[in-house]
Amino acid sequence: MALGTAQTVSWASTYYLPAVLATPMAADLGVSPVMIFAAFSAAMVVSAIVGPWAGMMIDRHGGRGILIASNLIFATGLACMALAQGPLLMWLGWLIVGLGMGIGLYEAAFATLACIYGREARSPITGITLIAGFASTVGWPLSALMEAHYGWRVACFGWAGLHLFLALPLNAWLPAGNLAVPAAAATKAGAGEDVPSRARLTMVLLAFVFAVTWFTSTAMAAHLPRLLEAAGATTAVAVGAGALIGPAQVAARILEFTLLRRFHPLVSTRLATLTHPIGAAVLFWLGAPGAYAFAFLHGAGNGVLTIAKGTLPLALFGPVGYGLTQGLIGGPGRALQAAAPLIFGYALDRYGVNAIWLTSGLGILALLALLCVHAGEREPQP
Image (cartoon, rainbow, N blue to C red; front, side, top):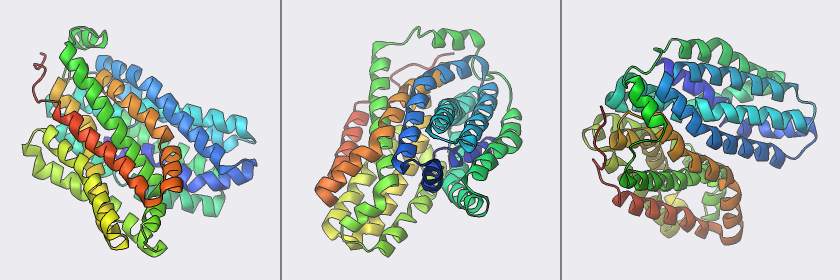
């Protein structure tokens, strides 16, 4: 509960911030909203660069200190944005926030849980995604409320305060150190020793899978209403269908927490890569009437894939070196995620609803990559 609540604050004040504050921020600073989103994309690139280092530190020392540092960094970056009078300090603020994202979002939280629970971390990982899955539900209205009444600068200061006075104490309450893995084993894993070539290939495959699925998730978050309207849906239908994504994610995570927990995470991950292509086929053939089915299927798959990003590497590689593994696997996804709105937006402008075949094809490729991964490829380490 503590970590899930802290993660809700971290996601709501970073990943979901530009959707509400980009336009008023740009108008006040005299820049285009495109520049705000460009700075946000740069922040995600920074997060991809620092992720492996953060994971290695968590392997060695546990996650409490890293997560506390992330709250301080988030607060600093948000304060920089709030004080900005031009593009320079705004960019600096986003780059600082990007550093915080690299050490304070799901990858770090998953690694922290692996340090506490070891191989039994699957259920806690699912649990924090159930809680933090409401980050947009909480974050968007709260950001909008603060902006409407006090302006975007106070909104940034407000989120900075929540990091210092809510998220930081919750993270400080977490157990210290790596309780599940001996320090010597964690240090050895952090040095990159004893990693068979087959395990390295599996890491490459997983990095590809999560990169293309995060690309799809970000592309849909940015362009779903336009895509549904291109398929013939009205604006009201597009908005209504989009509202199904959140409940679909939560429903799928509850399914993972109950029924699917009996199976290896490979099973649920493979199924999750299929839901977006299946939904796309329904949308393509039915047009507007298929909008709701597409949104629900996409949301359900995305909900399970978020969990799989934490549970699948843990099941395949074990808790030793898990944080570094998470950072290496997640890095390409963060970088590709930064380019997703631009790439899919161009495809949507040029090809209309047929742009859906781009993300659907990526989903099929992700499934094929997962079919090359087999459970138990690497023996559990002590």
